[in-house]
Amino acid sequence: MGRAYQNRKDSMAKTSDMKAKVYSKYGREIYVSAKAGGVEPSGNLELRGLIERAKKDQVPAHVIEKALDKAKGAGGEDFSRARYEGFGPGGCMVIVDCLTDNPNRTFGDVRVCFTKTKCKIGTQGSVSHMFDHSAIFVFKHDDEEAVLETLMTADVDVTDIENEDGVISVFAPNTEYFKAKTSLLESFGELDFDVDEIQFLPQNTQTLAGEELETFEKFIDMLNDVDDVQNVYHNVALS
Image 1: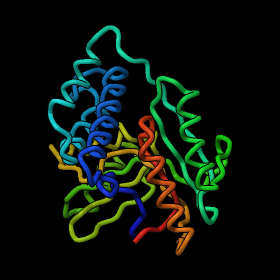
Image 2 (image 1 turned 135 degrees about the vertical axis):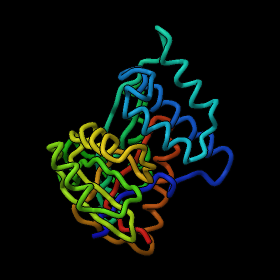
Image 3 (image 1 turned 120 degrees about the horizontal axis):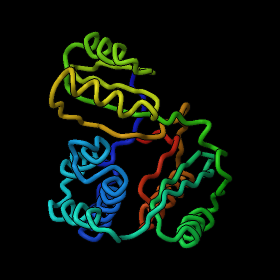
Image 4 (image 1 turned 90 degrees about the vertical axis):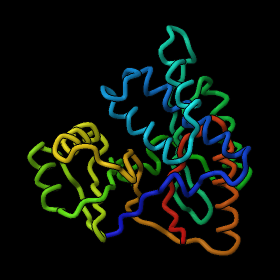
């Protein structure tokens, strides 16, 4: 009960400048998804989820449309995914997901965030083995058994399912994302997902206090200020 996942709204910007950065990150992610899987949301479930999430996070329509228009073109920017792992204050574990058109620049920017807060950037796999890479779907529904039966019939490897006050949370391996979402939509029609994404979920959490917590918050703020950083996952339990 209560598997910890991070809602992007928790890090929504407090100023117009920060909002612009959030919009830019969504625009970049939508562009990459549309470029890879097609610009039609009906045929690209990842893109469809991204657009729905962007709208809920109040990303302007013109930002979404601009990203889709760029993806329709023959040229455009060449972004690649980059992932960095390491240890933060108190030995907490951190995963940083990026989209970059210059890996050397991005690595340098991320490394500065680690070094300036006396954190330690690690090698690939140094902390990710302590996280579950999971597809997460959260939506309103009153029949947990029907949802589970639908997923099992579709041969989805469900790792966990929760029902709290009529809100269902489904967890599955990240590789099951498309199969799980397709089966849910085919069985229950147009669901309004509160969460529809792939995240890293910590297998264990830890708490920080005092100076360690202050340094951690500074560290996360610095990472979120890096243009190429899309998501930051960690195992710190925040109130």
